[in-house]
Image (tube, rainbow, N blue to C red; front, side, top):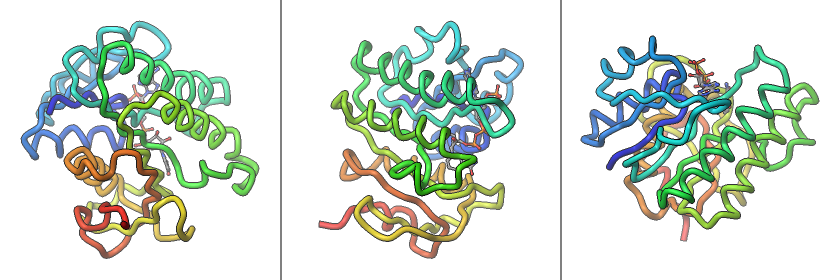
Length: 214
Ligand SMILES: NC(=O)c1ccc[n+]([C@@H]2O[C@H](COP(=O)([O-])OP(=O)(O)OC[C@H]3O[C@@H](n4cnc5c(N)ncnc54)[C@H](OP(=O)(O)O)[C@@H]3O)[C@@H](O)[C@H]2O)c1
């Protein structure tokens, strides 16, 4: 599968490009700076330029699926949250609709389902994530929305714990590597299409954990 990764130079993104290539897929690493091309090549990806605030149109050409794992990060202002986490995500979704790319995996966030229940300092970020998720669902794309809890840079374990949207709330932090591996598993498991999956560290093998309940 040709999978375009938006945010390919980020923490999850770099892990994801490598894991897609290791699993026999053809990752396209979309980055906003040519200086990042070598990092993508080293991980087995084809680098492409695409700036969510600028020139972006050709970045997804030839993709069968798209993963959005970009983000403005915690060190920028709410202006960048709006432009990247919300508007950048919408631009990516629109490009998929226009180009007939049906499969989409969104890296959202825990608590995006109810921003007002989160600490005040991160509510605007969660509103942006939730709005992007809702927009994605409104398009009818074959989408899996993944809502991880706090991310770490620990080594991947291959094991997670999940809560499908209608079930319980809390759990352990999760390594970015395990989020990346979960995305690969979701792309390879059609039953995750249409699901919103909250993701935590845990002890269930990833491929088993992501199978939805009947
Ligand atoms: N941090 C957490 O605990 C947490 C929890 C739940 C969900 N999430 C979500 O998980 C996802 C990945 O998180 P992460 O910590 O792995 O991300 P990260 O390391 O901060 O990477 C984000 C990437 O987005 C890219 N980006 C920013 N602006 C861009 C633009 N205008 N055009 C193209 N790319 C742009 C950055 O590019 P550069 O490399 O050029 O800067 C960076 O590579 C994000 O969507 C985040 O909101 C995070």
